[in-house]
Length: 120
Image (cartoon, rainbow, N blue to C red; front, side, top):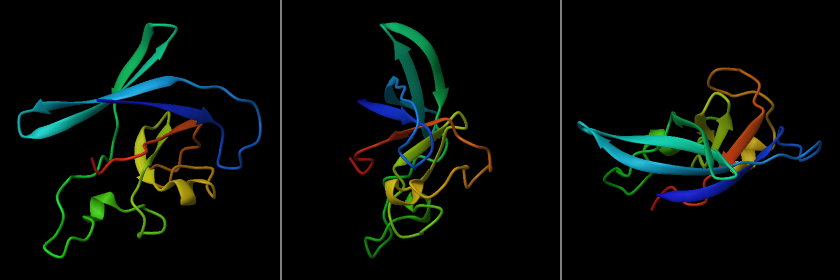
């Protein structure tokens, strides 16, 4: 289980600020691991929802990243940024700075969460 903080707005870094404390947990569900995002404010649960696109921990025989781990934009860096409210974990923190819509569903995002180390 990890805890992290997210920010608001697009990748340009401007505008107002807001934040939420979030944590994710791993729970075995039959043969898969379910990743959830739990948002809290001042100790009260706001919501708990699944995050889409968590990478698998498996590597190919050459030690390269699985395709599910790669940023959907550059296809080279590991994805580490979840866009909200759509909850798609689909871009790296570098490419995130250049977008204003989710590359998976094309919906504009209001805020985001950067995971520091998904390989652990």
